Length: 113
Ligand code: 5GP
Ligand code: ZN
Image 1 (cartoon, protein in one colour):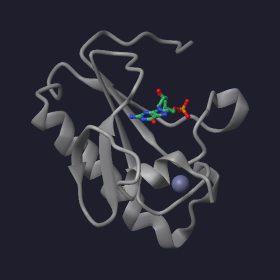
Image 2 (spheres, rainbow, N blue to C red; image 1 turned 90 degrees about the vertical axis):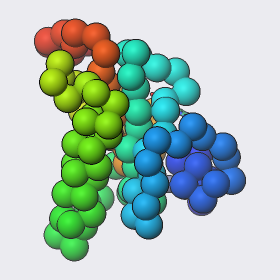
Image 3 (cartoon, rainbow, N blue to C red; image 1 turned 120 degrees about the vertical axis):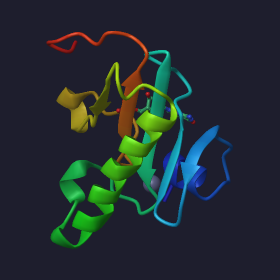
């Protein structure tokens, strides 16, 4: 399977890593949309959030704990941040390996564009 984020997770494509464990990798987005723009991915391939199953609950919960840790480590926890998951065409998804955007360092707007 030709998946760019699987290749990043396997270290075949370089990335600027923020966090890594057996299940999750976090790295800086190549085209940042905020002063802090990190992508948190499961190492397991899911094309979209729609592929998550009951057996993945622990993994997905783990991703949110890592987001929590990264926000604190980067010192953006008090001012705040946004976590975004885009899904399919209307969601604006461009990379079909599940990823969580962690955006911070500026005021986010609502409604989102
Ligand atoms: P999506 O639009 O699918 O929610 O987000 C995909 C994100 O992946 C975009 O923000 C894009 O800038 C980022 N991205 C795409 N290719 C690469 C890459 O090779 N390396 C990194 N670090 N980010 C990438
Ligand atoms: Zn993948």
